[in-house]
Image 1 (cartoon, one colour):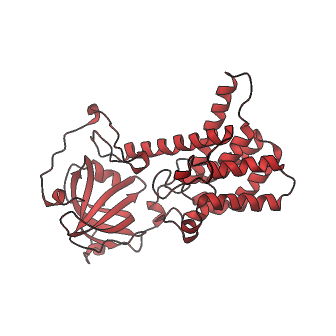
Image 2 (image 1 turned 90 degrees about the vertical axis):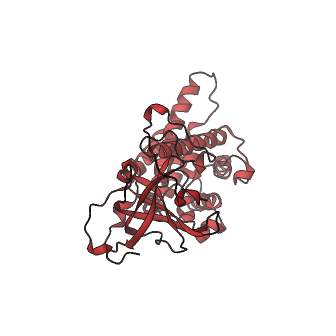
Image 3 (image 1 turned 180 degrees about the horizontal axis):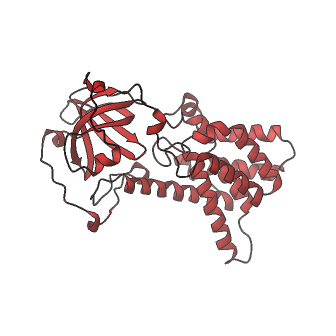
Length: 343
C-alpha cells in the first residue's frame, strides 16, 4: 500500500480510459469487485483482482503477495498496463482505500432506469395477461419493490449490474410478445398462452432477490447458497397464492410453478424438473438467449481497444469471441516475468 496516495492529486483515469491507453503507469480510481488470493504456476502467491466502474471492468494482478485490496471498496491506485491474452490488464504497484468515494458512482446500472422497467412490467401484466394472474404477480412485485429496483440478475454471468434483474426480465417479456405474435401468424392454432408465458417470465428469477446480496460486491447470501433462487421463487409464489385465494385456478397455479422450477432447462443445470409445457419450453430458451446476448455484449464492450478477440467468457462456455481484424490495432508488449507466471 502506498500511504501517500490520498495526498496526491493526479489525473485519475476511468476503466474505459485504462483500456484505451496504449501503455504506461497510470493513476486511477475503481471499485474492487473481487479480490482473490491464488497461487501461480511457479508456486508464488498472487492476488487476482477485478476492478470496475460505470464504464466497464478490467483485470488486475498483484504478484508475490497474498494480500490485495478489499472487495466492495473504491481504491486509489497506480499500476503498469500490459496485455495478456489480447486484453488489457493492470499490475498494481500500490493502492489505498478511498474512504470518501461515493460507491454509487462506481456501480454499473441497467440501461433503462429501474423504476421505468418496474412500471413497464406492471403495465404489460395488466395489458396482456389475464386479470387473475396479472393481479397475483403484480402483488408479488409490489411486495418486493425496493429490492427489485437494485437487484442484479447474476453475480457475474449476465446482467450483473444495478437493476439487472428487472432489465433481464423486461427484455424477456418483450421477446416473448414478439415471438407469440410471430408464430400466431404462421400456425392455425394458438399453441402458446401469452398470458401464462409473460407471467412465468416475470416470476422465473424473482428468487434472486434472496439469493444475491445486491449490486455492490455481489455475493451469494447464506440463504441463496442453502436454498437457491428457484426454491425461493416458488416460495414467493406459494405465499402469494395463499394470500390471494381464488385469483387463479389450480391448473394455472401448477403451470406457473412448473415454469419457475423448470426454467434452467435440464436437471444437471439445476432445475428439479425439465420444461414440458409450451410456455416453459419457450421461457427456458428466451432465458438462454437474453442472458447469452448480454454476456456477448458485455464481452465485446469490455474488450481492449483494437483487440481481435474478446476475453474468454464463462457465460459463453469459456469461449472468446472473434471481433475481426478490421477493428484491430497492433499492441506490442515485452515478454516479462508478469506474463510468464500467469496462472
